[in-house]
Image (tube, rainbow over all chains, first blue to last red; front, side, top):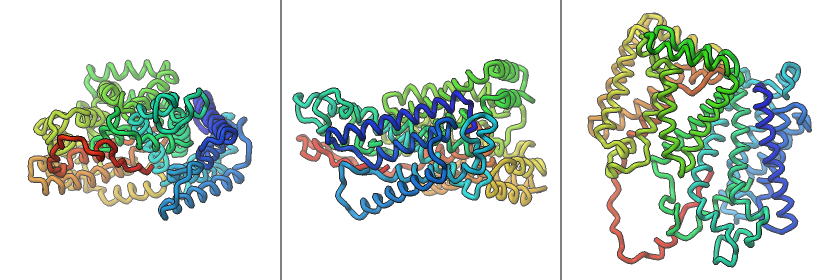
Length: 218
Length: 335
Protein backbone atom coordinates (compact mmCIF):
# COMPACT_ATOMS: atom_id res chain seq x y z
CA UNK A 1 0.00 0.00 0.00
CA UNK A 2 1.03 3.62 -0.26
CA UNK A 3 2.39 4.28 3.22
CA UNK A 4 6.01 4.62 4.34
CA UNK A 5 7.80 1.28 4.08
CA UNK A 6 8.57 1.02 7.80
CA UNK A 7 4.96 1.75 8.70
CA UNK A 8 3.46 -0.78 6.30
CA UNK A 9 6.06 -3.27 7.54
CA UNK A 10 4.88 -2.74 11.12
CA UNK A 11 1.26 -3.27 10.14
CA UNK A 12 2.23 -6.33 8.09
CA UNK A 13 4.15 -7.76 11.04
CA UNK A 14 1.15 -7.18 13.28
CA UNK A 15 -1.11 -8.97 10.79
CA UNK A 16 1.23 -11.92 10.62
CA UNK A 17 1.46 -12.05 14.40
CA UNK A 18 -2.32 -12.26 14.60
CA UNK A 19 -2.31 -15.00 11.96
CA UNK A 20 0.33 -17.00 13.82
CA UNK A 21 -1.48 -16.57 17.11
CA UNK A 22 -4.77 -17.78 15.65
CA UNK A 23 -3.07 -20.69 13.93
CA UNK A 24 -1.54 -21.62 17.27
CA UNK A 25 -4.96 -21.53 18.88
CA UNK A 26 -6.32 -23.85 16.23
CA UNK A 27 -3.48 -26.30 16.83
CA UNK A 28 -3.96 -26.16 20.60
CA UNK A 29 -7.70 -26.59 20.22
CA UNK A 30 -7.20 -29.67 18.08
CA UNK A 31 -4.61 -31.28 20.34
CA UNK A 32 -6.17 -30.44 23.68
CA UNK A 33 -9.79 -30.70 22.52
CA UNK A 34 -10.52 -27.28 23.95
CA UNK A 35 -13.25 -25.30 22.28
CA UNK A 36 -12.30 -22.40 20.08
CA UNK A 37 -14.21 -20.67 17.33
CA UNK A 38 -12.78 -22.55 14.39
CA UNK A 39 -14.36 -20.35 11.75
CA UNK A 40 -13.28 -17.12 13.39
CA UNK A 41 -9.72 -18.21 14.03
CA UNK A 42 -9.47 -19.71 10.56
CA UNK A 43 -10.71 -16.48 9.03
CA UNK A 44 -8.16 -14.47 10.97
CA UNK A 45 -5.32 -16.73 9.90
CA UNK A 46 -6.06 -16.18 6.23
CA UNK A 47 -6.88 -12.53 6.84
CA UNK A 48 -3.53 -11.92 8.53
CA UNK A 49 -1.63 -13.59 5.72
CA UNK A 50 -3.63 -11.78 3.03
CA UNK A 51 -3.26 -8.36 4.64
CA UNK A 52 0.48 -8.83 5.10
CA UNK A 53 0.72 -9.62 1.40
CA UNK A 54 -1.27 -6.54 0.52
CA UNK A 55 0.98 -4.36 2.64
CA UNK A 56 4.37 -5.79 1.66
CA UNK A 57 4.85 -7.22 -1.81
CA UNK A 58 7.46 -9.75 -0.70
CA UNK A 59 4.83 -11.35 1.56
CA UNK A 60 2.35 -11.97 -1.22
CA UNK A 61 1.28 -15.59 -1.36
CA UNK A 62 -1.75 -15.97 -3.63
CA UNK A 63 -3.19 -14.02 -6.56
CA UNK A 64 -5.93 -11.55 -5.78
CA UNK A 65 -8.57 -13.61 -7.57
CA UNK A 66 -8.04 -16.55 -5.25
CA UNK A 67 -8.20 -14.34 -2.18
CA UNK A 68 -11.44 -12.85 -3.48
CA UNK A 69 -12.98 -16.30 -3.74
CA UNK A 70 -11.72 -17.31 -0.30
CA UNK A 71 -13.04 -14.23 1.45
CA UNK A 72 -16.30 -14.28 -0.47
CA UNK A 73 -16.80 -17.85 0.73
CA UNK A 74 -15.94 -16.82 4.27
CA UNK A 75 -18.41 -13.93 4.04
CA UNK A 76 -21.10 -16.35 2.88
CA UNK A 77 -20.30 -18.63 5.82
CA UNK A 78 -20.55 -15.85 8.39
CA UNK A 79 -23.71 -14.56 6.73
CA UNK A 80 -25.19 -18.03 7.03
CA UNK A 81 -24.14 -18.15 10.66
CA UNK A 82 -25.90 -14.87 11.24
CA UNK A 83 -29.09 -16.25 9.71
CA UNK A 84 -28.80 -19.34 11.87
CA UNK A 85 -28.46 -17.24 14.98
CA UNK A 86 -31.50 -15.20 14.06
CA UNK A 87 -33.45 -18.42 13.63
CA UNK A 88 -32.50 -19.35 17.17
CA UNK A 89 -30.00 -22.09 16.40
CA UNK A 90 -28.12 -23.52 19.36
CA UNK A 91 -24.76 -21.77 19.85
CA UNK A 92 -21.69 -23.94 19.48
CA UNK A 93 -18.39 -23.29 21.25
CA UNK A 94 -16.68 -24.30 18.01
CA UNK A 95 -18.32 -21.66 15.87
CA UNK A 96 -18.51 -17.89 16.00
CA UNK A 97 -21.25 -16.61 18.24
CA UNK A 98 -20.93 -13.04 16.91
CA UNK A 99 -20.53 -13.45 13.16
CA UNK A 100 -21.40 -9.89 12.09
CA UNK A 101 -17.93 -8.34 12.64
CA UNK A 102 -16.31 -11.22 10.79
CA UNK A 103 -18.81 -10.90 7.98
CA UNK A 104 -17.90 -7.22 7.65
CA UNK A 105 -14.19 -8.02 7.78
CA UNK A 106 -14.50 -10.60 5.02
CA UNK A 107 -16.59 -8.19 2.95
CA UNK A 108 -13.93 -5.51 3.46
CA UNK A 109 -11.25 -7.92 2.29
CA UNK A 110 -13.23 -8.76 -0.84
CA UNK A 111 -13.78 -5.05 -1.42
CA UNK A 112 -10.08 -4.27 -1.11
CA UNK A 113 -9.04 -7.12 -3.40
CA UNK A 114 -11.56 -5.96 -5.98
CA UNK A 115 -10.08 -2.46 -5.91
CA UNK A 116 -6.52 -3.78 -5.93
CA UNK A 117 -5.83 -4.97 -9.49
CA UNK A 118 -6.05 -1.59 -11.20
CA UNK A 119 -3.26 -0.08 -9.19
CA UNK A 120 -1.16 -2.99 -7.98
CA UNK A 121 1.37 -2.75 -10.73
CA UNK A 122 1.94 0.95 -10.24
CA UNK A 123 2.48 0.54 -6.53
CA UNK A 124 4.89 -2.33 -6.89
CA UNK A 125 6.85 -0.45 -9.50
CA UNK A 126 7.14 2.79 -7.57
CA UNK A 127 7.85 1.99 -3.97
CA UNK A 128 8.33 -1.71 -3.66
CA UNK A 129 5.13 -2.17 -1.76
CA UNK A 130 2.42 -4.47 -2.81
CA UNK A 131 0.05 -1.82 -4.02
CA UNK A 132 -0.88 1.81 -4.10
CA UNK A 133 -4.58 1.82 -4.39
CA UNK A 134 -7.42 4.22 -4.12
CA UNK A 135 -11.12 3.61 -4.11
CA UNK A 136 -11.96 7.20 -4.98
CA UNK A 137 -12.48 6.37 -8.63
CA UNK A 138 -14.37 3.22 -7.83
CA UNK A 139 -18.13 2.96 -8.14
CA UNK A 140 -18.20 1.64 -4.60
CA UNK A 141 -16.01 4.31 -3.06
CA UNK A 142 -18.81 5.23 -0.70
CA UNK A 143 -18.26 1.89 1.06
CA UNK A 144 -14.70 2.62 2.13
CA UNK A 145 -15.42 5.07 4.92
CA UNK A 146 -18.35 3.18 6.49
CA UNK A 147 -16.31 -0.03 6.48
CA UNK A 148 -13.38 1.70 8.18
CA UNK A 149 -15.68 3.39 10.69
CA UNK A 150 -17.35 0.07 11.49
CA UNK A 151 -13.98 -1.51 12.20
CA UNK A 152 -12.84 1.39 14.36
CA UNK A 153 -16.17 1.37 16.13
CA UNK A 154 -15.80 -2.31 16.82
CA UNK A 155 -12.30 -1.79 18.20
CA UNK A 156 -13.56 0.91 20.56
CA UNK A 157 -16.55 -1.19 21.60
CA UNK A 158 -14.24 -4.14 22.20
CA UNK A 159 -11.97 -1.96 24.33
CA UNK A 160 -14.93 -0.97 26.45
CA UNK A 161 -16.08 -4.58 26.80
CA UNK A 162 -12.65 -5.89 27.67
CA UNK A 163 -11.95 -3.18 30.24
CA UNK A 164 -15.33 -3.92 31.78
CA UNK A 165 -14.71 -7.66 31.80
CA UNK A 166 -11.09 -7.60 32.97
CA UNK A 167 -11.77 -8.71 36.58
CA UNK A 168 -13.79 -11.67 35.35
CA UNK A 169 -11.05 -12.65 32.96
CA UNK A 170 -8.60 -12.65 35.81
CA UNK A 171 -10.92 -15.01 37.64
CA UNK A 172 -11.24 -17.12 34.55
CA UNK A 173 -7.51 -17.79 34.43
CA UNK A 174 -7.13 -18.47 38.14
CA UNK A 175 -6.32 -22.04 39.22
CA UNK A 176 -9.32 -24.30 39.17
CA UNK A 177 -8.71 -25.21 42.79
CA UNK A 178 -9.38 -21.64 43.78
CA UNK A 179 -13.08 -22.21 43.34
CA UNK A 180 -15.72 -22.09 40.68
CA UNK A 181 -14.70 -19.82 37.87
CA UNK A 182 -15.89 -19.53 34.32
CA UNK A 183 -14.60 -22.83 33.12
CA UNK A 184 -11.57 -21.53 31.26
CA UNK A 185 -8.59 -23.79 31.44
CA UNK A 186 -7.32 -25.78 34.33
CA UNK A 187 -5.05 -23.16 35.80
CA UNK A 188 -2.01 -24.41 33.93
CA UNK A 189 -0.06 -21.78 32.04
CA UNK A 190 -1.18 -23.13 28.70
CA UNK A 191 -1.86 -20.95 25.66
CA UNK A 192 -5.52 -21.69 26.12
CA UNK A 193 -5.65 -20.10 29.54
CA UNK A 194 -4.10 -16.93 28.15
CA UNK A 195 -6.70 -16.72 25.42
CA UNK A 196 -9.14 -14.31 27.00
CA UNK A 197 -6.45 -11.69 27.43
CA UNK A 198 -4.97 -11.90 23.99
CA UNK A 199 -7.94 -12.62 21.77
CA UNK A 200 -9.61 -9.19 21.96
CA UNK A 201 -6.28 -7.40 21.62
CA UNK A 202 -5.36 -9.41 18.55
CA UNK A 203 -8.79 -8.74 17.11
CA UNK A 204 -8.27 -5.03 17.69
CA UNK A 205 -4.88 -5.13 15.96
CA UNK A 206 -6.40 -6.95 13.01
CA UNK A 207 -9.23 -4.45 12.67
CA UNK A 208 -7.01 -1.40 13.07
CA UNK A 209 -4.71 -2.74 10.37
CA UNK A 210 -7.64 -3.35 8.07
CA UNK A 211 -9.02 0.10 8.88
CA UNK A 212 -5.64 1.61 8.04
CA UNK A 213 -5.68 -0.15 4.68
CA UNK A 214 -9.17 1.12 3.98
CA UNK A 215 -8.18 4.67 4.93
CA UNK A 216 -5.30 4.44 2.47
CA UNK A 217 -7.90 3.66 -0.17
CA UNK A 218 -9.93 6.78 0.51
CA UNK B 1 -10.47 -14.32 16.70
CA UNK B 2 -12.66 -15.63 19.43
CA UNK B 3 -13.06 -12.26 21.06
CA UNK B 4 -16.77 -12.89 21.33
CA UNK B 5 -15.90 -15.90 23.45
CA UNK B 6 -13.46 -13.92 25.49
CA UNK B 7 -15.73 -11.02 26.31
CA UNK B 8 -18.98 -12.85 25.98
CA UNK B 9 -18.51 -15.39 28.75
CA UNK B 10 -17.42 -12.75 31.16
CA UNK B 11 -20.94 -11.42 31.20
CA UNK B 12 -22.17 -14.42 33.12
CA UNK B 13 -20.04 -13.78 36.15
CA UNK B 14 -21.80 -13.23 39.43
CA UNK B 15 -22.66 -9.74 40.54
CA UNK B 16 -20.78 -7.97 43.24
CA UNK B 17 -17.41 -7.97 41.54
CA UNK B 18 -15.76 -4.98 40.03
CA UNK B 19 -17.11 -3.97 36.72
CA UNK B 20 -20.62 -5.21 37.28
CA UNK B 21 -22.11 -1.84 37.92
CA UNK B 22 -22.83 -1.17 34.29
CA UNK B 23 -24.43 -3.99 32.39
CA UNK B 24 -25.34 -2.01 29.32
CA UNK B 25 -23.91 1.10 27.76
CA UNK B 26 -25.62 4.26 28.92
CA UNK B 27 -26.03 7.23 26.61
CA UNK B 28 -23.00 9.06 27.92
CA UNK B 29 -20.77 6.04 27.46
CA UNK B 30 -22.07 5.58 23.92
CA UNK B 31 -21.20 9.19 23.14
CA UNK B 32 -17.79 8.77 24.74
CA UNK B 33 -17.17 5.74 22.55
CA UNK B 34 -18.28 7.70 19.49
CA UNK B 35 -15.72 10.34 20.43
CA UNK B 36 -13.17 7.55 20.79
CA UNK B 37 -13.98 6.31 17.28
CA UNK B 38 -13.35 9.78 15.86
CA UNK B 39 -10.00 9.96 17.67
CA UNK B 40 -9.03 6.56 16.28
CA UNK B 41 -10.03 7.76 12.82
CA UNK B 42 -7.91 10.89 13.34
CA UNK B 43 -4.94 8.78 14.36
CA UNK B 44 -5.19 6.56 11.30
CA UNK B 45 -5.71 9.59 9.05
CA UNK B 46 -2.51 11.00 10.50
CA UNK B 47 -0.75 7.82 9.35
CA UNK B 48 -1.61 8.58 5.70
CA UNK B 49 1.43 8.74 3.41
CA UNK B 50 1.08 12.44 2.60
CA UNK B 51 1.36 13.29 6.29
CA UNK B 52 4.94 12.05 6.25
CA UNK B 53 5.88 14.56 3.56
CA UNK B 54 6.36 18.33 3.53
CA UNK B 55 2.70 18.70 2.65
CA UNK B 56 1.84 18.35 6.32
CA UNK B 57 3.98 21.18 7.74
CA UNK B 58 3.09 23.31 4.73
CA UNK B 59 -0.58 22.80 5.53
CA UNK B 60 0.04 23.83 9.14
CA UNK B 61 2.01 26.89 8.08
CA UNK B 62 -0.90 28.06 5.93
CA UNK B 63 -2.98 28.59 9.05
CA UNK B 64 -0.60 31.35 10.12
CA UNK B 65 -1.65 33.56 7.23
CA UNK B 66 -3.68 36.56 8.31
CA UNK B 67 -3.24 35.88 12.00
CA UNK B 68 -1.64 38.44 14.32
CA UNK B 69 2.05 37.98 14.98
CA UNK B 70 1.54 36.57 18.44
CA UNK B 71 -0.49 33.73 16.93
CA UNK B 72 1.34 33.36 13.64
CA UNK B 73 4.80 33.18 15.25
CA UNK B 74 4.27 29.93 17.19
CA UNK B 75 2.47 28.39 14.21
CA UNK B 76 5.37 29.16 11.91
CA UNK B 77 7.84 27.89 14.50
CA UNK B 78 6.00 24.60 15.03
CA UNK B 79 5.54 24.10 11.29
CA UNK B 80 9.28 24.62 10.83
CA UNK B 81 10.07 22.16 13.59
CA UNK B 82 7.77 19.56 12.09
CA UNK B 83 9.26 20.19 8.67
CA UNK B 84 12.70 19.21 9.98
CA UNK B 85 11.50 16.04 11.71
CA UNK B 86 8.32 15.30 9.82
CA UNK B 87 8.52 11.50 9.87
CA UNK B 88 9.25 11.13 13.56
CA UNK B 89 6.92 13.88 14.74
CA UNK B 90 4.05 12.81 12.52
CA UNK B 91 4.39 9.23 13.72
CA UNK B 92 4.25 10.55 17.29
CA UNK B 93 1.21 12.72 16.54
CA UNK B 94 -0.62 9.83 14.92
CA UNK B 95 0.20 7.49 17.77
CA UNK B 96 -0.99 10.03 20.33
CA UNK B 97 -4.34 10.43 18.60
CA UNK B 98 -4.76 6.69 18.22
CA UNK B 99 -3.90 6.27 21.90
CA UNK B 100 -6.46 8.93 22.85
CA UNK B 101 -9.18 6.98 21.07
CA UNK B 102 -8.18 3.67 22.61
CA UNK B 103 -7.75 5.36 25.99
CA UNK B 104 -11.31 6.61 25.86
CA UNK B 105 -12.48 3.11 25.00
CA UNK B 106 -10.58 1.60 27.93
CA UNK B 107 -12.55 2.45 31.04
CA UNK B 108 -9.59 2.65 33.39
CA UNK B 109 -7.87 5.27 31.27
CA UNK B 110 -10.97 7.23 30.33
CA UNK B 111 -10.33 10.23 32.58
CA UNK B 112 -6.66 10.42 31.63
CA UNK B 113 -7.50 10.15 27.94
CA UNK B 114 -10.17 12.84 28.12
CA UNK B 115 -7.81 15.15 30.02
CA UNK B 116 -5.05 14.51 27.52
CA UNK B 117 -7.46 15.05 24.64
CA UNK B 118 -8.35 18.49 26.01
CA UNK B 119 -4.69 19.47 26.27
CA UNK B 120 -3.95 18.04 22.82
CA UNK B 121 -6.95 19.75 21.25
CA UNK B 122 -6.06 23.14 22.67
CA UNK B 123 -2.47 22.79 21.47
CA UNK B 124 -3.54 21.76 17.98
CA UNK B 125 -6.21 24.46 17.86
CA UNK B 126 -3.58 27.10 18.47
CA UNK B 127 -0.55 25.68 16.68
CA UNK B 128 -2.22 23.70 13.92
CA UNK B 129 -5.40 25.53 13.09
CA UNK B 130 -4.56 29.11 14.03
CA UNK B 131 -7.64 29.22 16.28
CA UNK B 132 -9.84 28.33 13.34
CA UNK B 133 -9.08 31.58 11.56
CA UNK B 134 -11.17 33.54 14.05
CA UNK B 135 -8.51 36.17 14.57
CA UNK B 136 -7.57 36.21 10.90
CA UNK B 137 -11.13 36.97 9.79
CA UNK B 138 -11.15 33.91 7.57
CA UNK B 139 -13.40 31.81 9.79
CA UNK B 140 -16.13 30.19 7.76
CA UNK B 141 -18.52 27.39 8.55
CA UNK B 142 -17.60 25.59 5.36
CA UNK B 143 -13.98 25.71 6.48
CA UNK B 144 -14.89 24.21 9.83
CA UNK B 145 -14.88 27.35 11.98
CA UNK B 146 -14.26 27.73 14.87
CA UNK B 147 -11.85 24.89 14.14
CA UNK B 148 -12.99 21.31 14.50
CA UNK B 149 -10.33 20.42 17.02
CA UNK B 150 -11.73 22.71 19.70
CA UNK B 151 -14.94 20.70 19.53
CA UNK B 152 -13.02 17.66 20.78
CA UNK B 153 -12.09 19.61 23.91
CA UNK B 154 -15.67 20.79 24.44
CA UNK B 155 -16.96 17.25 24.01
CA UNK B 156 -14.37 15.90 26.44
CA UNK B 157 -15.59 18.36 29.07
CA UNK B 158 -19.28 17.70 28.45
CA UNK B 159 -18.80 13.93 28.43
CA UNK B 160 -16.57 13.90 31.49
CA UNK B 161 -17.48 10.86 33.61
CA UNK B 162 -18.63 12.72 36.66
CA UNK B 163 -22.12 12.87 38.08
CA UNK B 164 -22.14 16.40 39.44
CA UNK B 165 -25.81 16.63 38.58
CA UNK B 166 -27.28 13.10 38.47
CA UNK B 167 -30.76 14.45 37.74
CA UNK B 168 -29.50 16.55 34.85
CA UNK B 169 -31.86 16.85 31.91
CA UNK B 170 -29.20 15.76 29.41
CA UNK B 171 -25.90 13.93 29.21
CA UNK B 172 -24.05 17.19 28.61
CA UNK B 173 -25.39 18.65 31.85
CA UNK B 174 -24.28 15.78 34.07
CA UNK B 175 -20.64 16.71 34.34
CA UNK B 176 -20.75 20.49 34.30
CA UNK B 177 -24.22 21.21 35.60
CA UNK B 178 -27.18 22.40 33.62
CA UNK B 179 -26.51 26.12 33.36
CA UNK B 180 -22.86 25.88 32.30
CA UNK B 181 -23.84 23.30 29.67
CA UNK B 182 -26.56 25.61 28.41
CA UNK B 183 -24.04 28.42 28.23
CA UNK B 184 -21.63 26.26 26.21
CA UNK B 185 -24.41 25.42 23.75
CA UNK B 186 -25.48 29.04 23.41
CA UNK B 187 -21.95 30.30 22.86
CA UNK B 188 -21.05 27.55 20.39
CA UNK B 189 -24.09 27.69 18.15
CA UNK B 190 -24.34 31.47 18.58
CA UNK B 191 -20.76 31.84 17.41
CA UNK B 192 -21.51 29.60 14.43
CA UNK B 193 -24.40 31.94 13.55
CA UNK B 194 -22.02 34.86 13.80
CA UNK B 195 -19.42 33.14 11.60
CA UNK B 196 -22.10 32.64 8.96
CA UNK B 197 -22.42 36.42 8.70
CA UNK B 198 -18.71 37.21 8.46
CA UNK B 199 -17.40 38.46 5.11
CA UNK B 200 -15.68 35.11 4.54
CA UNK B 201 -19.14 33.53 4.29
CA UNK B 202 -21.48 36.27 3.14
CA UNK B 203 -19.61 37.45 0.07
CA UNK B 204 -21.56 36.60 -3.12
CA UNK B 205 -19.32 33.74 -4.23
CA UNK B 206 -17.76 32.81 -0.90
CA UNK B 207 -19.78 29.73 -0.02
CA UNK B 208 -20.09 28.49 -3.60
CA UNK B 209 -16.34 28.82 -4.15
CA UNK B 210 -15.61 26.82 -1.01
CA UNK B 211 -18.11 24.17 -2.06
CA UNK B 212 -16.49 23.93 -5.47
CA UNK B 213 -13.09 23.54 -3.80
CA UNK B 214 -14.49 20.75 -1.66
CA UNK B 215 -15.36 18.84 -4.82
CA UNK B 216 -11.70 18.62 -5.80
CA UNK B 217 -10.36 15.14 -5.20
CA UNK B 218 -13.69 13.89 -3.94
CA UNK B 219 -15.36 10.79 -5.33
CA UNK B 220 -17.89 11.35 -8.09
CA UNK B 221 -20.99 11.17 -5.92
CA UNK B 222 -19.67 13.71 -3.41
CA UNK B 223 -18.29 15.97 -6.11
CA UNK B 224 -21.73 15.90 -7.73
CA UNK B 225 -23.37 17.10 -4.50
CA UNK B 226 -20.81 19.83 -3.88
CA UNK B 227 -20.76 21.01 -7.48
CA UNK B 228 -24.53 21.26 -7.71
CA UNK B 229 -24.75 22.99 -4.34
CA UNK B 230 -22.06 25.40 -5.46
CA UNK B 231 -23.88 26.26 -8.67
CA UNK B 232 -27.19 26.65 -6.81
CA UNK B 233 -25.66 29.06 -4.31
CA UNK B 234 -23.57 30.94 -6.84
CA UNK B 235 -24.16 34.69 -6.36
CA UNK B 236 -26.55 33.92 -3.50
CA UNK B 237 -23.92 33.88 -0.81
CA UNK B 238 -25.54 36.64 1.21
CA UNK B 239 -28.98 35.04 1.23
CA UNK B 240 -27.53 31.64 2.08
CA UNK B 241 -25.50 33.17 4.89
CA UNK B 242 -28.52 34.91 6.37
CA UNK B 243 -30.68 31.76 6.23
CA UNK B 244 -27.90 29.72 7.79
CA UNK B 245 -27.30 32.30 10.50
CA UNK B 246 -31.01 32.43 11.39
CA UNK B 247 -31.23 28.65 11.63
CA UNK B 248 -28.10 28.47 13.76
CA UNK B 249 -29.36 31.25 16.01
CA UNK B 250 -32.61 29.34 16.48
CA UNK B 251 -30.64 26.27 17.47
CA UNK B 252 -28.55 28.38 19.86
CA UNK B 253 -31.48 29.83 21.82
CA UNK B 254 -33.49 26.61 21.80
CA UNK B 255 -31.49 25.31 24.74
CA UNK B 256 -33.57 27.65 26.92
CA UNK B 257 -36.89 26.53 25.41
CA UNK B 258 -39.21 23.75 26.57
CA UNK B 259 -38.25 20.15 25.86
CA UNK B 260 -40.30 19.65 22.66
CA UNK B 261 -38.77 22.75 21.08
CA UNK B 262 -35.32 21.70 22.23
CA UNK B 263 -35.76 18.27 20.66
CA UNK B 264 -36.78 19.88 17.37
CA UNK B 265 -33.77 22.18 17.58
CA UNK B 266 -31.42 19.27 18.21
CA UNK B 267 -32.80 17.47 15.16
CA UNK B 268 -32.25 20.68 13.19
CA UNK B 269 -28.73 20.93 14.61
CA UNK B 270 -27.91 17.39 13.47
CA UNK B 271 -29.32 18.13 10.00
CA UNK B 272 -27.29 21.34 9.79
CA UNK B 273 -24.19 19.47 10.94
CA UNK B 274 -24.75 16.86 8.23
CA UNK B 275 -25.26 19.57 5.61
CA UNK B 276 -22.12 21.37 6.76
CA UNK B 277 -20.18 18.13 6.59
CA UNK B 278 -21.25 17.58 3.00
CA UNK B 279 -20.38 21.20 2.25
CA UNK B 280 -16.98 20.59 3.81
CA UNK B 281 -16.46 17.74 1.34
CA UNK B 282 -16.82 15.30 4.25
CA UNK B 283 -13.71 16.76 5.76
CA UNK B 284 -11.84 16.16 2.50
CA UNK B 285 -11.32 12.62 3.73
CA UNK B 286 -10.93 11.42 0.18
CA UNK B 287 -8.02 13.68 -0.68
CA UNK B 288 -5.41 11.89 1.40
CA UNK B 289 -4.67 15.15 3.22
CA UNK B 290 -7.39 15.09 5.87
CA UNK B 291 -6.29 15.09 9.49
CA UNK B 292 -9.80 14.87 10.90
CA UNK B 293 -13.36 14.53 9.62
CA UNK B 294 -13.97 18.29 10.11
CA UNK B 295 -16.61 19.82 12.34
CA UNK B 296 -19.78 18.19 10.98
CA UNK B 297 -19.66 14.85 12.88
CA UNK B 298 -18.45 16.55 16.04
CA UNK B 299 -21.27 19.08 15.97
CA UNK B 300 -23.77 16.24 15.53
CA UNK B 301 -22.22 14.36 18.44
CA UNK B 302 -22.32 17.45 20.59
CA UNK B 303 -25.96 18.05 19.70
CA UNK B 304 -26.87 14.49 20.69
CA UNK B 305 -25.25 15.06 24.07
CA UNK B 306 -27.93 17.67 24.73
CA UNK B 307 -30.85 15.40 23.87
CA UNK B 308 -33.28 15.69 26.79
CA UNK B 309 -33.09 12.62 28.97
CA UNK B 310 -36.25 10.66 29.63
CA UNK B 311 -36.92 10.93 33.36
CA UNK B 312 -36.74 7.50 34.95
CA UNK B 313 -38.89 6.71 37.96
CA UNK B 314 -36.99 6.22 41.16
CA UNK B 315 -36.57 2.54 42.02
CA UNK B 316 -36.88 1.82 45.74
CA UNK B 317 -33.90 -0.03 47.14
CA UNK B 318 -34.97 -3.32 48.70
CA UNK B 319 -33.59 -4.02 52.13
CA UNK B 320 -32.63 -7.62 51.28
CA UNK B 321 -30.74 -8.45 48.11
CA UNK B 322 -32.84 -10.53 45.78
CA UNK B 323 -31.54 -13.37 43.64
CA UNK B 324 -32.03 -11.14 40.64
CA UNK B 325 -29.64 -8.61 42.13
CA UNK B 326 -27.02 -11.23 42.81
CA UNK B 327 -27.22 -12.63 39.29
CA UNK B 328 -28.49 -9.93 36.94
CA UNK B 329 -29.69 -10.95 33.55
CA UNK B 330 -27.07 -9.29 31.41
CA UNK B 331 -28.04 -9.16 27.77
CA UNK B 332 -25.49 -10.60 25.41
CA UNK B 333 -24.28 -7.68 23.38
CA UNK B 334 -24.25 -8.07 19.66
CA UNK B 335 -21.25 -6.77 17.86
